[in-house]
Image (cartoon, rainbow, N blue to C red):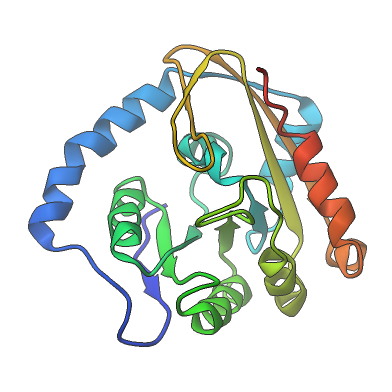
Length: 220
C-alpha cells in the first residue's frame, strides 16, 4: 500500500521539510512495532465487513482511535490504497508526513481551512477506486461530535460507509481535546465494523452518529 500524498488546491497547505521527515522515521518504526504487538479481537462479521468492502469506501473513525488504524488496515486490507483527510495546518503537515511513513496518503484540508478543495479531492480519490478515512469529530472537536462532512462526501461519490469502532481494554489517554487513546503494548483491542450503503444514510445522519458512538465504547 505505497501511496503519494494528494493535496487540495491552493497555497495555504503547510508541508514538512525533508530533514524533518527523516526525524519522524524512527517514531514511525516504533509505532509500527507497538501496534504489531496489539492483540486484535475481530468478530467474523466485522472482519468480513473490513475485507469485503469495496476499495472505494469511506472509513469513519473517531479522532481518538486513529492510533490503531494503520495496523488494522495493514492486517485486513493489505494492498489496497487509503488516504486520510488531514488538516492543512502546520500540525497537519507533521501528521501527514508521519502517516506517509505508515503507507497512508494524505488529502490536506478541513472544515476550517481548504474545506471545499479537500472535499473535491476526497470525491475524486473515491471515484478513482481508493478508500478514504475521515474523522467526523476532527480536527478540533468537540470529541464525538459527528460533523456531516463524511456523509456529504460519500453521498457525492455514491460510496459506502465503513463505520470503525475500537474498544480498548488497557490504554493510556492523553490530555488532548479528544483524550487520545494509546493502547498499552501487547494489550487487547476489540475491533467493531459496520458497513452502510449510500441509500441507507442519505437522510439518516443522526442514526449513523448513534451507531458510531455505540461501537466505540469508552471502558472507563
